[in-house]
Amino acid sequence: MTSTSSRPTTEPTTEPTTEPTAPRRPSTAALCLALAAVLAGSIVCGVALGPVGIPFGDVLRFLQAALTGGTIDAAEAGPYRIVWDIRLPRVLLAAVVGAGLSVVGVAIQAMVRNALADPYVLGISSGASVGATAVATTGLFASLGIYALSTAAFLAALAAMAIVYLVAGRNLTSLRLVLTGTAMAYGFSAIAMLLVFQSPRGEAARAAMFWLLGSLGGVTWASLPIAAAVVGAGIVYLRTRAKHLNALSMGDETATTLGIDVSRTRQELFLVTAAMTGVLVAVSGAVGFVGLMLPHLVRLIVGADHRKVLAVAPLAGACFLIWVDVAARLLAAPEELPLGVITAALGVPCFILLMRRRGYVFGGR
Image 1: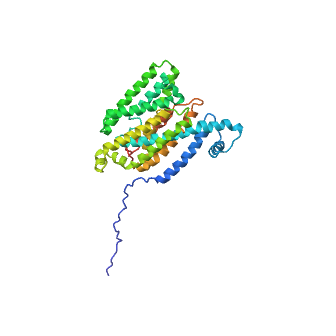
Image 2: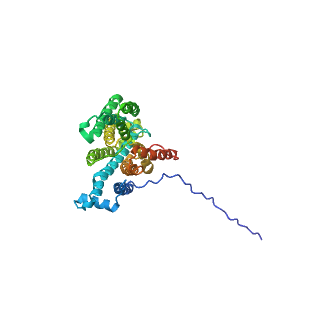
Image 3: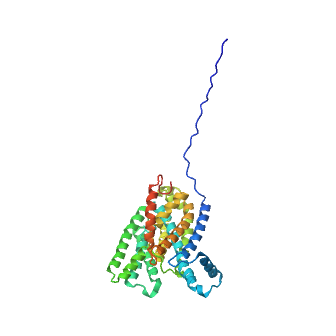
């Protein structure tokens, strides 16, 4: 008798291969709604917090009374004035400036294809600093009172914009624009420092230096409408050019093949971003690092598509600068710190960590 032994047969198995997948991005709409809620809360906190603390319930009650025409007790006139006349316009202007600087930073980094570009790389802020320093040290435009500094800064920013445009030439390549703006910025900064150095009034020189580092002190309701209108119009325009910015960020040759007039588009973007920068610098001074850091952080979250970046960046920048202003008011109370000191202290380590992040490149991962 023969017996046959059967051996178990094993069929070859193939292990599933896992391919790297792109990181899942959050929904842009959900992110914008969340940031809008954070912004609303930041505005209330920004009004409540300060050297003189005001309870959140009182802040909400005062704001409701002001917006609906309600009444408050005569004993609460002092806190009401602090909330409505002093802190609320300041907090709203901080939101406007933060949103504007973030959006301008996004546009300029794509326009010149430079990860280190920010709203001040065009030399506009340095030109504005000449006008502001001239007012602080020589009394220029003294007849305009509290509007003298912002008026001189804006006019000097327009002059700087015209000079940069004329020197760079009509064919605004990214390299010519960056080199011209950087060179002019050094020249304007030298003039501003010379005015400070030769000023016989030490307090005037200190005021000029404080403004050069960014400040929202002394803001009134009159400072808000023009800045808000310019920033709002600029954001709307840049969002209509989101596809152009996507193409420019890939290089001039790629943008040309996609049917974009690169030179004309760059001229339009230069004029819009320069005008926005001039207005923002005129009302807040040169607040550094916001327009450099926020665009990179937003791209890291939503990707490189400028349609998404330009939707999220204004809200993120507004929230960020509100809290920077709160820190500037509280850390050295009753004195104030320049905004640029806070943004640099936060921005430098954050930017170093961002650059060390594995796989991060300009425009996303």
